[in-house]
Image 1 (cartoon, rainbow, N blue to C red):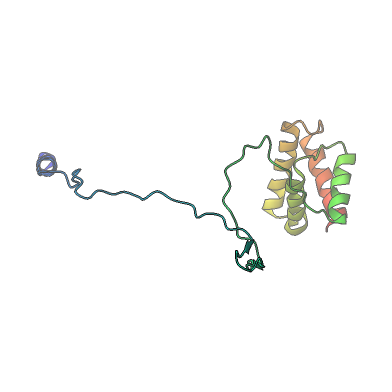
Image 2 (cartoon, rainbow, N blue to C red):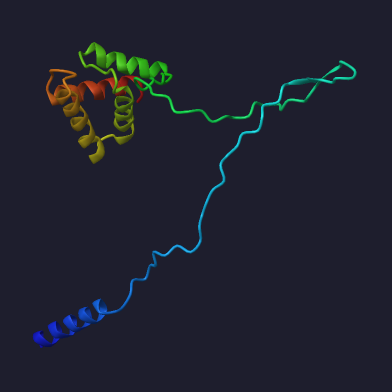
Length: 162
């Protein structure tokens, strides 16, 4: 029976490979071309008539139209200032006062505080705090133990948000 299945598969494979031509023709019968783009001449905001020497002003659109510009190279990504609430400032201040460097990870730490306040004694909370504490230690943001950092985050979050 095994030999019969193998033979059937081989015959099928050979039949498929023996089928004729390719399904795509590389012959191009229609030529495609795109006409070059031309720019219209810029019009002045006012024109002077040659006979009466009066100046007429053409109406301008209410909003300026967007214009394409070339790409520009930047040296660094601009920082976006996120407004902080008083609770955020208090929370981040408590962490900084406990010798935890929060610069650059403020949003993640505020998110962790939300998990603390909403999670209570859930599995997510029990896993999140040690994970964040471990990351802060691995990133060299503190020299405290995982347990100490987790306790500091939990206490600061409770004081500021919960």
